[in-house]
Amino acid sequence: MNLEGSSAVVTGASSGIGEAIALELASRGARLTLTARREDRLDELGGRITSTGGEAPLLVAADLRKAEDITRIFEESRARWGGLDILINNAGLGRKAGFHDGATEDWREMLEVNVLALTVACREALGCFDGERGGHIVNVSSMAGHRIPPRGGFYAATKFAVRAITECLRQELRALGSPSRVSEISPGFVTTEFHEVFYRGDAEQVAAGRPDYRVLDPRDVAASVIHILEAPDHVAIHDVLIRSNEQES
Ligand SMILES: NC(=O)c1ccc[n+]([C@@H]2O[C@H](COP(=O)([O-])OP(=O)(O)OC[C@H]3O[C@@H](n4cnc5c(N)ncnc54)[C@H](OP(=O)(O)O)[C@@H]3O)[C@@H](O)[C@H]2O)c1
Image 1 (cartoon, helix red, strand yellow):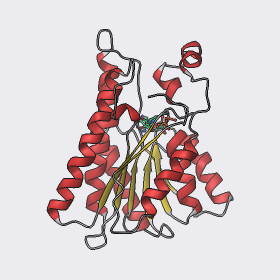
Image 2 (tube, protein in one colour; image 1 turned 90 degrees about the vertical axis):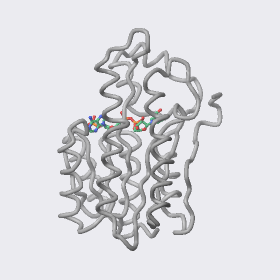
Image 3 (cartoon, protein in one colour; image 1 turned 135 degrees about the vertical axis):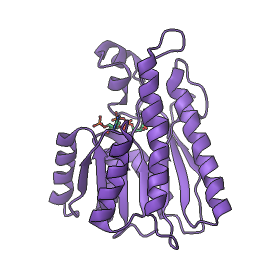
Image 4 (cartoon, protein in one colour; image 1 turned 30 degrees about the horizontal axis):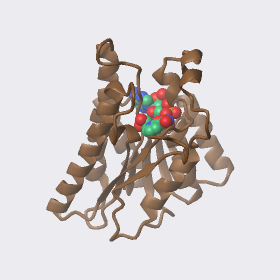
């Protein structure tokens, strides 16, 4: 796909991997709808994109735990850009919430954002894609969706679900004869705010959990997402497992 002039929704664009993907897409001339809850972060990112010559993105403050917010993202995107070519289903979170002592509310939040919102967004995006040209969905999964990390807890369960959803959707699209593609990317440890959220800002636990080797930067993940999107129409890159060369599992 030629990204110049394409229309893309990026969820979780206010930090980390989503922000890096937004910057890469903007630098290639994509028309962006950027969404997250933190409006100040979206404003700041929008300013950075326009100051470097990119087209002003549409910024939509939304809480993906609310179904009406998800549909609003796609309505506003369609009204602004007239159609949709790409969905980057990136928003997600982990909470330290083991199975023996986790809080039900933490499990619910991970389930609602990582699984349910991602699924609703897939459906909404497919409804916006051009019937003949199709579009491309990239779900951000995790290495935690491929093997069970120590203390992965409920987070790993949600990322295994993303893997199942991506493959089931691929099969549905094939059965429908749709030209649309669905891919996923499964990163290992990436330096983002993910770990602050996971440990609820407990700096000691965040520091203790940080590897002592060079981990991935969000831009490393963004570069692979661009590779997925720029593949020729007949090529479906299903999943990219990407981790630091020094990460053991
Ligand atoms: N960092 C890693 O090591 C790693 C590894 C593998 C996979 N991943 C995956 O990568 C994706 C991005 O995470 P990240 O590492 O970039 O972490 P991050 O910096 O914490 O970014 C998470 C993004 O998700 C958004 N988000 C969370 N809850 C939301 C909600 N209820 N409504 C709307 N947006 C919400 C956040 O925006 P607001 O808070 O502004 O709403 C933020 O933009 C996630 O799916 C994560 O599971 C991360």
